[in-house]
Image (cartoon, rainbow, N blue to C red; front, top):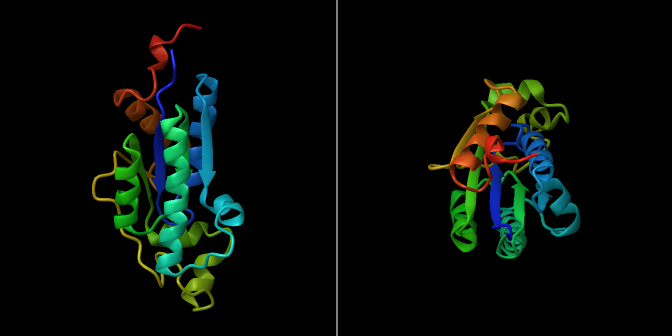
Length: 183
């Protein structure tokens, strides 16, 4: 039986836990024998979107590029996991409409908690004005209105967030329930 392709799109502010949970989900999906690829925003910026800045137009172009790759993977029976801040709702909705089999995962975390966890020191620099166009500080982040899954990394452990997400993917029919699988 061939695998049904779909895209899982993680969105949220820097440091909210998108990549951490996405990497764990990637492992779970591999362990379940699925063809899966992961597109991380930072890695894509280095390779596929080199030369783009952080203007609204450049951010939108970056998200459309990630979306295009996810669309190709999805239509070819691969599970695509995208993890990118993707701050603008309209472009996320455009990508969702283009792909079809799309699950939006909002990694939600309050700004004060993100500032406390700020391992790279980016929020501190942005608040001092040393980094311009920083999402959540000097540039907007538009929260999803109807994300299929909301992960609250200030209230949930990584394991709890992962379990919530896997349960939703099983409920939506994208993952076969673990209990139904034969070892």
